[in-house]
Length: 344
Image (cartoon, rainbow, N blue to C red; front, top):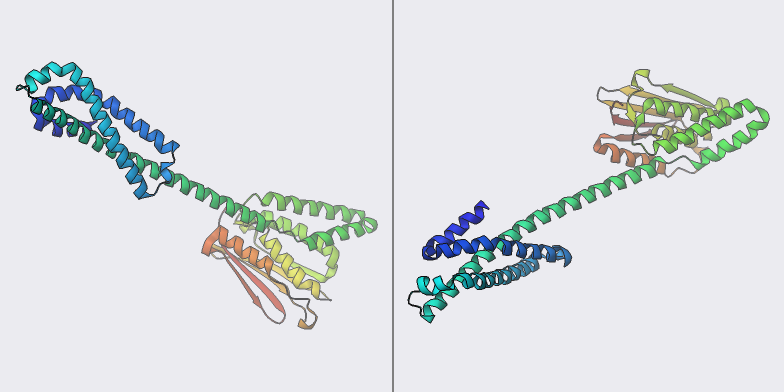
């Protein structure tokens, strides 16, 4: 309003002889101005002007400002000339000549037209700026939400990777164990149900505590040992004071499963698989090491899809801070997982 008042004074001062007339005009000018901008706002929303190019929007806005400004100026003259016709003809145009009267009419309409057009254009510019900023923020918010949903869906897809080969073997072993040792079969069923429940629940979480992951590793090893028996020598070398730190769910389990499936299962006499963890001040570094069979009797090489999925999960969760390295010798296969330390 202060800006409008200041602009009004700039226009009125040069026309001081018409100041009283223009002052009363201004009292009724604001409702017309308000109506004009409300019409523009309605057209902007209903006709989809927000989708126009900058050039097209500028053209439409300019035409609207000129037409609405002229319409308001003419209406204002018609209304107030009916109230001030006597003053106009006797005081403002003392000569009462048609030329002086026409000049006054044209000057009044032109001045009001310019003023109204400027104000409407300024309001349109401000409204478009605010609306564009709001649309950009909403678009950015929708994009961020979509990115978050995509990340969440990707993580769920990558983390939900219980190997069908493991499930098939586990169920077969349980079927045979039922006839030989019902107590062991019952324990295997309990372990399998805990693994399945953990897999489902952890798919809704980006990270779990190391203690939760270790608990499910023990359940997994219990089932695998029913198949490999004494062929599997498993060692877990992780200090308990690290159990409260967070890691991606099922990652260690999948790396252990990878070592058993592509390593120990191919060794007739069995072998060793160990999981250890180093505390590196700001990071945790896990080492998963398994024995390898003689290359002459190894099965068809793995495609490494499991390791690729884990790398993708680390990238989504930690960016460049997560690392998965693989090294191989004639007798050992080592996976090194390094992640930032995070307490639960």
